Image (cartoon, rainbow, N blue to C red; front, side, top):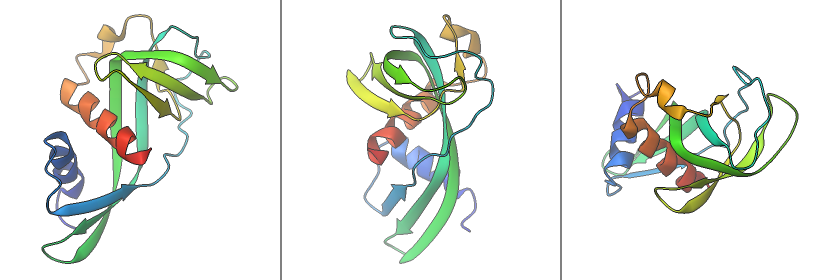
Length: 136
């Protein structure tokens, strides 16, 4: 395992430096923690995505495997959702990027996403968005 491979690939994603790496994201697994209510259309959401990534380095001709755990918050609005409490499949509209994304689970739903800004950074939010784009 390459040291800090997860951090490296996320930074590469964030800065759009795809020239030396090829990778694919596995379908995220459901996480059932801290979900206490159903998603409601028009509600702001805070999301968490966790899964695995396979990375091919063209320079060394080697594959690396790692995991990712990314967060997004603040700019998502639920436009479609279904499922029992704690298990969601929903589509969310991102205000900043003006795109729809499929989100397989929600870490926490809150009417004021700014409450978590101290623990989450805008960089992780953008990296989450990139991961979702690649997955789709």
